Length: 120
Length: 112
Image 1 (cartoon, chains in turn blue, red):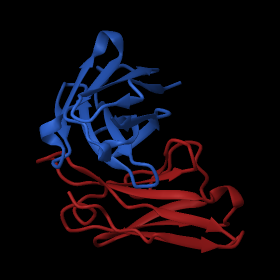
Image 2 (spheres, chains in turn blue, yellow; image 1 turned 120 degrees about the vertical axis):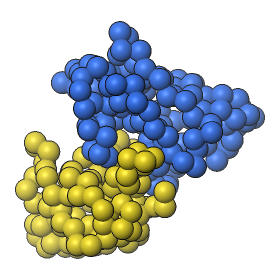
Image 3 (tube, rainbow over the protein chains, first blue to last red; image 1 turned 180 degrees about the vertical axis):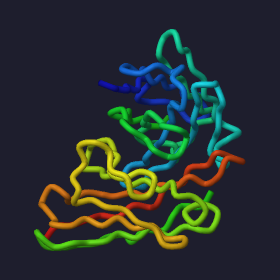
């Protein structure tokens, strides 16, 4: 059974850096054609794709957030880490990680999500 | 990467069929047969319902089907059931130059 679980702070202050960890099980981060994406959803709003990392360590980022995002993985720990710098209240959202199959926008399954609030 | 365009809401009665549209551009929906659809119930994570335009993952009811014409993809749900009431999001691959995955704004489906 494939599962993903997000972890990280529930509250960050404006200008701080957010670090989120996605721990996966049931598949290996070194499996060909497999990757992990981060996707967020502000309260009551739509989904927004943030970043992706492939099994070969290839990375891609949302063009609008590229300057603030860094994605990395530790295959031995089955973890993918996302950092987002200079957090702002508009970044308040539920952050999801999802298995990304073949880099085609096929996200399956998703983690349960973690709500991050940005407030002083 | 501009968001794909979906109707804000659709509704239907039990047993009826509904279709949700998802309009993109020639750079995303129109160029690739890589549209996926997600169902999201309140407070829950999204669930993959359709991928690569028209394929259903194992376990997804055959009442859900996907199609595409030009720059517009569509999700059709036949034989509406109460549990189909949810938000639905489309998603399209937008090219390898930036990888680029773009989501739609979401559609609220109400089962009357």
